[in-house]
Image 1 (tube, rainbow, N blue to C red):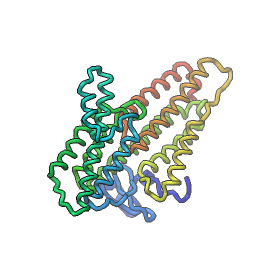
Image 2: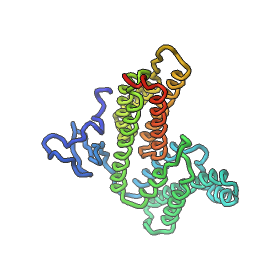
Image 3: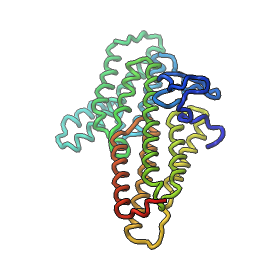
Image 4: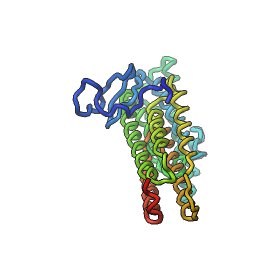
Length: 327
């Protein structure tokens, strides 16, 4: 990694020098080489100061969360808020379960955008000197739209098509409902959970492939990629270091995906199939880590199913090619 990259979030899992031997309490902050970090569940995560808790700041936050959501979900559901009535009628009048699921996702998108539209207008009024009460009719409507979109968000798939990410739908409602500082704190908890799953996926990939002669050397690429992913996960796009961090993340992903199995002779169909299946499984692991890194939330269903595929691969390799499992 470039020497200018800030310390990795997982480099210090024990307390910094001069502290007690026990792990710090969650929420403990510490400076590392001039970078403030906060400790949660085994990880020191880079801290970003929360903005002042104002309607204007909440508008910017909700707008950012809205863009983030639509970047990670299936195409075609980013329906403008002004088409909310049309989207609701299409959903209500649809009887086919599969088509109703898609139209429910579109309605969720319209509700999401309607809430953002309302919040934007309220902030505009506030900037013009109009006193906007937190319990006003429009504020209540905004909250109701976010709440309904959260319920319908269960019908929306991640862009991978494998599962939904309920966390992304809930974030704007939390940002709307709680102080911004509390929202930022919840972000660190979710990042720690995501970092944990990146480590878990990397460990399973290494356990599955590192002892197989066809994939000897894969451990180095997996570790480099997972470390780059964890740094990317904790880093906001506005961070000055994002250029080095994003470049390292992308290049390490490309190197892992390009790893070529080392085929040994004689090249039997079974051996070639095992190598092909392993290569595909490595690419799937790279994609899964990339998805959760960019979203900064866990994907438990996809992770569980990936672990199951790795287990089946290990069993197949052990049963059919036992001698190949020894380095």
